[in-house]
Image (cartoon, rainbow, N blue to C red):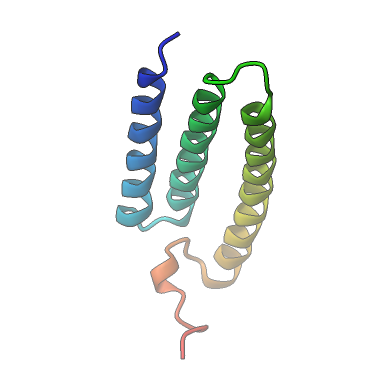
Length: 100
């Protein structure tokens, strides 16, 4: 399998995730953008591992990234739920009590 389509897919996912993180105001959408960027990193790790298929370094690092992504999603959603219960909004810009 050629590696260049994987690089293009990874760059596309990274750019879409970055645009979502920058543009969207909803905290859940920001978490989704971060997840897209982590998936782009996973695809890159697997693609880089195709150059030396006898080692499993890319797959092992990809598993670590997936574990970190699951933990990040669980903790992020818990924080968003608590902020929503307290402030009745999921827009991070409207939570102003912690500023200054």
